[in-house]
Image 1: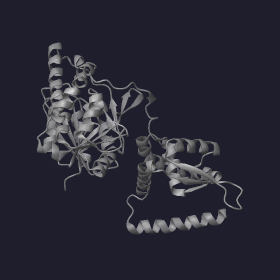
Image 2: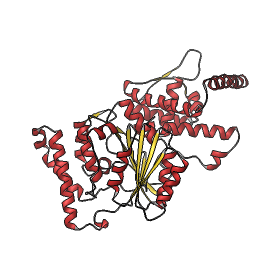
Image 3: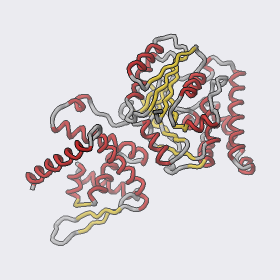
Image 4: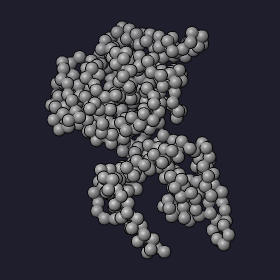
Length: 434
């Protein structure tokens, strides 16, 4: 049976970083993929490393060839691909453990032709978050092109590695990289793909770690005249793209904005400055907590797992993890006194009040104080405005992911037995605490 996803990695003298890249793929939560490694005439141990990965994991296939450049290496892998979707990485970068799962989920839930995601830019031990489209709904070709027009030379639109493609579109139109172009070759492929795609979705979750080590055209040893000619060739592709996707009057009206590409391209692919320390940007568990034994370690790992599952929903919706946890708690509890909710969430009453105010300020909850008869403490009645519906759906999906992760590999009988035993444990706890 063919895999759902073909993940393509061109490899050239990548010995120092290749293991990190490949292991980030092999350790994906989503497992229905094939990994194609194209060794493009490497002079170091990269080829042997690729063969080692293929010997250890049947999902890996390796192709060795004489050096012909990254575009030819990618084309070779596209010729050999069997998956419904195509995903790309560079050998000095890596992806988060849930990257492929989130891309495929977005593609299939929204029935779109292209998914584009946020990413991290890495420089040494520092990292920054990069995105561009904040709209949570499916976009038409014209809407996606309008976003791209605002930042025409942005890596977000130009590269392959923060996107998921439908292979049937690629093959139906025989889309391939141009080996004669060594600047913006990704972007030219994307323009041709976008012309054939109908619907697009932006995933506001950074899933890719881009290491800024690639040189500009000047540092690649390409002469000035060839550099200028290459950029003009790419611009003509870009200009022709908008002539194709926009009505003539709309194209004329936006011509100056389209020509802005020539100015932005002079920066040779600007990306944001790094800000946070690498490792602080996502949920992490210390080795001691991961391997520790005993009920306290079990509780800690369970909380960390919930945070890990909630994190994509929090990032997508611009929430902190504390806000996401509280929103999920409110959804499941339906309200309670401040004391009860503080106990339930593990927050102080002051922190609870602050987070409730934030969520209410964003229009995600409506809070009303009630004092039921014969009760001294007010009860908070929680309602969810219609605007909160898609975010609550993300929270419920995160909870489903959490449950699925806990019970992964359980048979139906084992799940039923686990639920029975868990209920008995909870009854024992209730009896003691009454």
